[in-house]
Length: 115
Image (cartoon, rainbow, N blue to C red):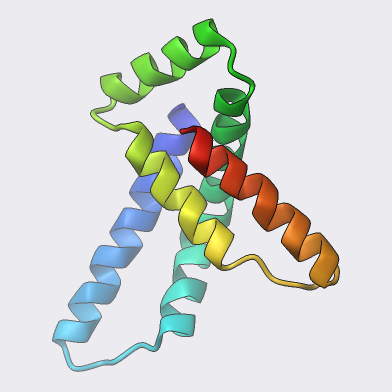
């Protein structure tokens, strides 16, 4: 959970920095914003969220309770993890082919639905 918090803070700081740039009349398109977030640690955050989603999907009640406890201790909820998973789901590329993309998106959607 410590890694989740560390990378979530990095990404949040980058989003705030980009928002400040927009106030300074420097427009960033969606791809530029996403790439900057990736550079600040979004991909690692997404992978950590996938791990949490996979653990949640396993339906192990003690594991779920532990995840919820750790999230609450950080003043977070499952919705925070779901938002990261949703962004990952929407931006999965098809580098390994369209079939692999669809398989991965289906798996991630199962994690989102389970949470």
